[in-house]
Length: 205
Image 1 (cartoon, helix red, strand yellow):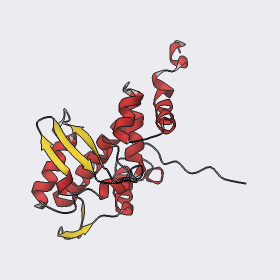
Image 2: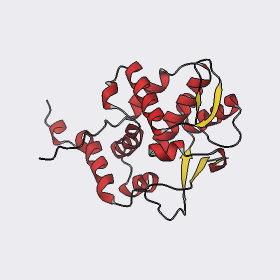
Image 3: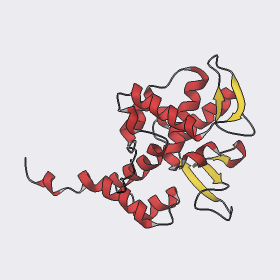
């Protein structure tokens, strides 16, 4: 008999803010903030997030345009562009934190997200998907969340669910996540609507 796949919890906007508030100082904190916020705002898969190069990032007056060279649903390698708007709060703005990370690290070419030694020395190698999960779990634990329920996918799922809660359209969510099937997006929207459109909230209890 088959068992249901364990679905990681979606990191919602308030969770992300709490996690960002618990990041370290220095280079590690700058990287973790940029990675968490960019992963959340871009609704990126782990592989897409760690696959980003500096050349894929174009900062403009409206925000950050990221070119995904390849992804799970882009087998032809044609790539697609993702827009990351400026956030209203500088502390949680994915664009400003990405800029701060690049400035502090001095990274101007090659992999965007890299490993850092415990002594704060930047390594040339690209992070792995497991590294993303470790950062998410570390910050979730510090924020008082159950770290076992969170992983790299929590950022992507959290974007879709949070956007649905805020009333974003199915079309706009699909455009950001890159889902070809609306069925997956609709699952996130249903999760987001559990409390936003809930008849029990009309009972006057």
